[in-house]
Image (tube, rainbow, N blue to C red; front, side, top):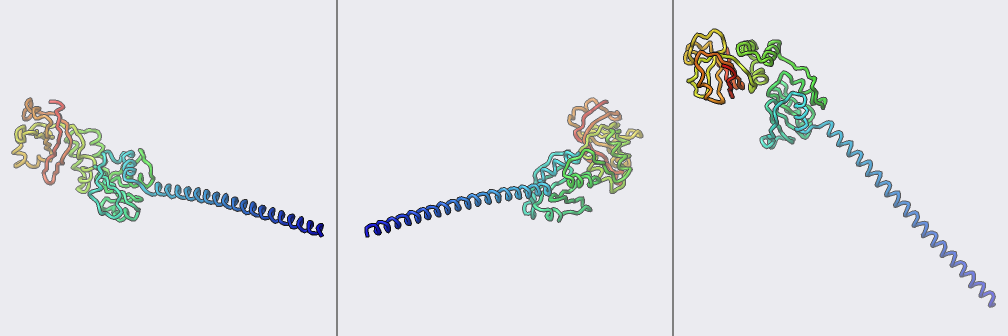
Length: 304
């Protein structure tokens, strides 16, 4: 009896031990499985983050490729020689314009950056010298004959020093060549007057105004305008005074240029009828049909 009882107790002990081992083994197995799942979860999250970052970078590259900042557009055009002046930020003047990000103003062109291409495209009208490329809208104020070059540079996304200048006519090209070769007044204005009425305005804004010239002329008056000299630029001068030219012989006016001097004292050693060479910046143009004279500013005497 005692032996049977002892045997029963021993069997119960063995079964309990086996049950305990199974429980521990299952626990360890569960813990191992949970760890593997966590590691897999971490791997998935890391991979997802990498994919998301790569996708984000791809989107950013697309934005850079398809969109410009106003400053980027300005730099491309300036580096291509299509713009020479510095820009002014005029964004505040256009507050409320739908989609407008920034607006820049230069002497040659106004540049506006928009959120989307659609916003910029609303202003595209070549007849008004207005163009849009990607998200940039620009209005040409000078150099309108070279609009294709402006568009090309922005479409290509890179500056170019090999752009071929375009001219509206052979006469305009001849005038530009003459101006760039610093010809004297008479040849300069005769070439300008040879342009068509439509060309004169554009040519003046692009190639004449604010440009420095050196011209020779005969002094017609030293007193009529206190800080200026009245000069006649052809060789048929016969002693006409400014009053006679401006009121009686108005056909001479298109060949008159009035020079506002930097130093009025320059006139002290000059006399009417004397031929002099003088430099200045073109401010306004003459007109043969309307009998207008030319005007220079920042005048400096070269020779007398």
